[in-house]
Length: 498
Image (cartoon, rainbow, N blue to C red; front, side, top):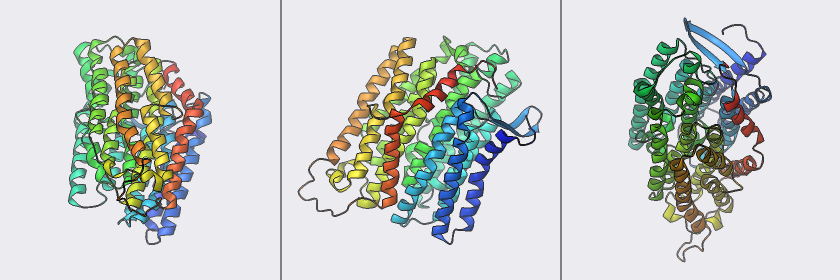
């Protein structure tokens, strides 16, 4: 696969190189905040334009490829832009400029320390994200998956206090422990079975004629699913709420732009391109994933219901919403896989809006608890209006994007006759409403008589960013043809396509 840089390879290379050059530029301009932030914004915009430039070719059926290197025979660092990776990369690159605008308002508004380091590692995290999205094989995916963990660790521990260091240990321990102890073992086993680690439409194992069944098939699936710790399946979810000690722009990165999305993206990629949907259909030893995903959806929702801290409530909501994606993939129906792919995008726009709103409330009002938010909507109408839209998306109510993805997930559950999945989606939707709707109602209730706070909205960059992501949440509901086309291509690629 290696060779000279043709037009396709050049565009993939640019998508990887632009964040690296941006990180260098940010580091060099660290003594000049305005210049540093200008470099951040320009880099983010260039990456977005570069990634979106790949979209027309992928929609037309093209699959841009680039073989970077082959350090060992049969083991290459290579890239291929297929529909799911295109969707993930487009969402991440589109949200980076918006997150950068938000970060400027948040980091300055809260006088955060080490801002240059923050922007540098944010750019490096986007480099790793692009590598994950465009990976052509498991080895490349693993390399960039690990780079994403390492590049986000300094962001999680940004504050440098005891709580941040403790959270960082949990974060690094769980994510590195699962990837080295389980995911790497699964990759080596796959290579031993198939003689390759390439991601192949219809499933590598099927294309290679590997006949793995019974407990061994279930074990390999287990190693992959729990090796991808970023998907936050219970009980290896603790890293995610622990990481809430980080600044809100980091929480947005973890929950919407990169980290958890890399997790569920990798889950869908493994099921579709390594095992293959048809290989796993009707296999009893593969059914456990459906029940673990359903358990995670419901349990995390019930824990979220009990959280008074706003960011922790959002964190457990994320754990639940991620397992919607796993549930859709585990249903092994084309409609449910389409729903899983769409939910990656819908959750990204909705959840980043919610975290942006939480950060705006902290910046303007210094409030962190749900119980403190009564009447705050009258002082911060833009923020809480955006929060309401993000909440509708998490619940799955029109006109927010979450309705579209949940529709396809439910259709897939009904198509397969999986009443367990139907029950999970219905019950979790009710739980979503139970822990989001009261926040919105309370925010626009009459303030308490002793509430004399005089604050208004957060700084303008914060308000602009959360308004933009709320608008994108609605626009994705109204104009979902492109992500739907990409998701449809994911399940219709001819078997054996590489």
